[in-house]
Amino acid sequence: MSARIMIIDDEKIVGDMAKISLEDEGYAVETFLSAAPALERLKEEKFDVVVTDLKMKGIDGLEVLKVVKEQYPDTKVIMITAFANLDVAIEAIRGEVFDFFPKPIKIKEMKESIKRALEG
Amino acid sequence: MKIASKIILSHVLSFIIIFMIGAFALESLNPMIAKLRFIEIADDLNIVFLEMRLSEKNYFLYKDENALSEISAKIKNTRDVIDSYSDSIIKVVGEGNFNTLEAYLDDYAKVVNSLNASHVRDKVSETRLRNAGKRLKDFSDEMTRLERHNINAIIFKSHNALFYSFFAILALVFVIGQRVSVNIVRPIKNIEEMANSISAGNFKRKKTALPKDEIGSVIRAINHMSEEISNRQEQIIQSKKLASMGILIAGVAHEINNPLNNISMIAETYEDMYEKLSPEQRMEFMGKVESETVRIKGIVKNLLDFAKPKEPERISADINEVVNKTLKLVQNMLNVSDIEVGLNLAEELPLVYVDVPQIQQVFVNLITNAIQAMPDGGKLNISTRLGKEPDTIETGFLDSGKGIPQEFLAHVFDPFFSTKEEGGMGLGLWVSYGIVKSQGGNILVESKVGTGTIFTVQLPVYKEKGEIE
Image 1 (tube, chains in turn yellow, blue):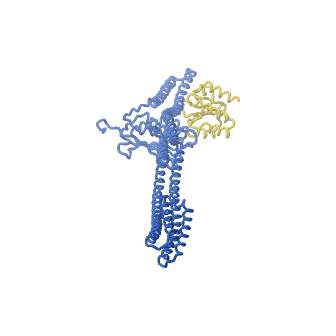
Image 2 (cartoon, one colour; image 1 turned 135 degrees about the vertical axis):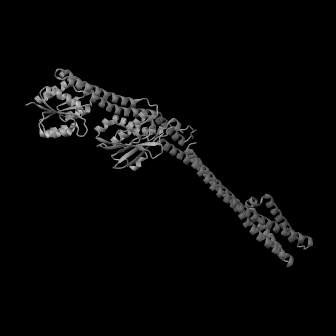
Image 3 (cartoon, helix red, strand yellow; image 1 turned 45 degrees about the vertical axis):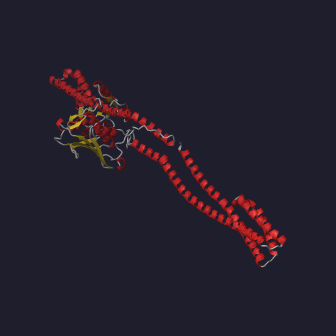
């Protein structure tokens, strides 16, 4: 069974582009524009990796991280953000994200990070 | 003169006046005592003189030869008294009168003695005796009368002097009070007014001659402080502008980063997946790149409009468009802070006559304040409508924040006034107020603690050239 990846970002293109490349790698990819429906979906099915934007309207990336760590401890979280801000990075790492990507993202690097997450 | 010296001087002056009055009273008391003493002596002498005249009478009427011896003894007695009090008597009546008295007494003694020796009662000797006695008694009476009169004059004079010095002291107290008021109380009042004017934001001071006392030093220090603040005022406004630019630029960087990331991801996917993409997909990708570029262009244009040089350039503008443009600038800040924006923009409003970038800066300041008043998110209602004042358009910014206590409301537009616990130099509203005022508008504030605050910006309506009065 192929690994399941969830991508949450309010920028539609981020999910669209990541989905094309990651599906090409053989992963099952689902994309969401906000966190609320994504968290609903997590209740229905197990995902191996959640890639989430940090700053979003409504529920933000740190809350997603908290929920996933509490309820789905096997699921790895990768954080992306438009703010290349060190404070946010430190806070995110403290919350045990698997990896952290400031925008602009290199899809190649993200693929490698997801690969490592699935191995580890 | 220093205030301390003035106080000492006024004390010395009071002391001198009181001392003079005391000395004067004492000065008029001393001769009075001497004269009273003389009158006592004179009264005694008058009694003796009267007794002498009685003895005379005995000699003439009853032919009593012993009477002459009695008179002689009394004359000797009187002489002793006069001699022993000569100093006091001379002091009062003068040496001339004293000598006259003694001469009259001697003359009287001589007549009595010659009669006593001859025992001859002739008309001439008797007349001499009577005249000498009478002259002595009259002279003594006259002296006594004169001195009583003098004492009355002295009492009257001291009474008058004390009466007038009472008024002199009153006048002095009044003058000193007046001087204290003019030299101390009034300058302190002036300093109070100066401080009030500075706290109202008026840093320009008139140069006037300073008094050379402590008040002068205080005024000099305040002027110096005020000058320093004035010199830095421009600097502060500039740095405030830079600070709000900084916040904006951080927001704008974030805004630009998103489409940039999108373009980068599209390009990478296009490159890696080229073979696997359908021609339609490739076209779609390029279309997306183009629309993301337009997005960046819009953001940059907004920023450029905002950052234009600050010479006010008033043009006719649609207030709703200004509001919408401003919202685009701060949209990200609002999203991140969980602020829901409600727009209630009136249709078909007349154009306003403003400097658009400057008014945008005011709106950014007001929105930033609203965001800071709602740290846990909330609702910001922005509305435009015809103003209550004629020829004005009102733009309202109503937040659902913690509100501003009534006692602070009057000060929100003062420089350096801030209710924010941290950060915030308290210049945003002051700068905004200055901008709006300079364009013929006004900012009003109403607030209710726990409910929220509304800032209302009134801006003038644009008039065609012919309409301008």
